[in-house]
Length: 499
Image 1: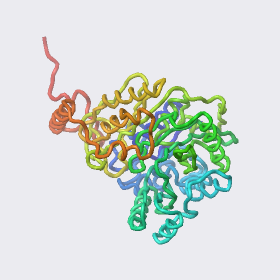
Image 2 (image 1 turned 90 degrees about the horizontal axis):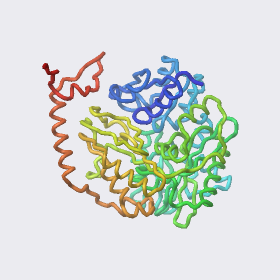
Image 3 (image 1 turned 135 degrees about the vertical axis):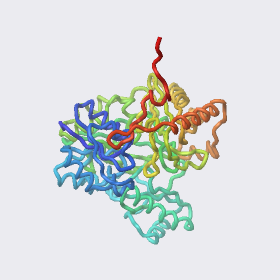
């Protein structure tokens, strides 16, 4: 087993991995950009290394800096988290050449499944159902136009080198294509360091269902059932749940077997996700493999009782899977809501600034994977996800109620978040009925506005009061780094009274 692991990421996923390392008796190393020097993931790690300035290409996407940090600290392995370099086969290949364990698939498998076009080619040969699409990735607008005409509009533009909705666009006509492709390539370059894109046929009103898989280096593979991720905004998942309300036992079995077939033909190891689209007639189509730990992995952990990060680390250290497919079952229901620093009233524009106050929701069946704290600054440079709120209950109905209550008990002051929007989605009658399709938000929540209440006014007044209080304080500086204010300093002037 490893003694020290470097986490090549930031925010809540870096903290999630660090906690797993601590539970396993492994030291953790954080990397950080200049703007992240006071971030929670830096404070959580056993040690931390500065790797560059705020732009991702100068820090979290800068392979040389991360490799140097591994060597400097003596870490034996790197966990990439999700996003940034998590699906970059060149990074995995570099780790292999340097004798560093990459906690994920090897570079060969990562190159195959991480390239959405190449993975489609392999799976098509095995008879796995596919959505019609391009045979090659491209950075040429004219080529994309030609392919779109062959496929037939509407088409869906995707980044070839990564997921998470980055670079994705629905293109409904020839007139929209040029601008959409150019914008998609710019976004793909910024997110993954690779501007290549591809097109596939856009299926109207599908469900997005994915299967979590685990495969060791000894030929053993299992799936941990499905997650439904159909509630999306701009092709970005915001609510995920397990089990899916759309799957019968028979359909679940077929899709799980197909997911394992994808793993087998690609030579994939470690944790990954095989994604499918499910149409209204229960026909399913292979979409892609996400060759990393997913943002929504906690819902699987909650219903299956298997820690995916622990398992990733154990597989990478050479261990065999210690359970078989027959040992895994789904228990109860879990839902995850992604908490973003975004303004739902202003077309979900990012909301940067200082979090003046935050209280994490707690209670039975409530989990909060968090990357921020009261007093921290939210940057404009990175994905605006702050945390993930997860609830578990014996039934879906109770789980929905528990999530709504947790969201109600989750004040965040100083910046805008999507918390109220998520709460309204969770309690929407169509969500409660399980009618969750990828067009749920535009169909059921167009032009959403928060309901103004006394609670809203109280939050505004409290926010103003906190801002005035914090502005009057002088931050403590230790070693050139601003500390999180202690509860004693945030109370203002005080002294112990004498009798």
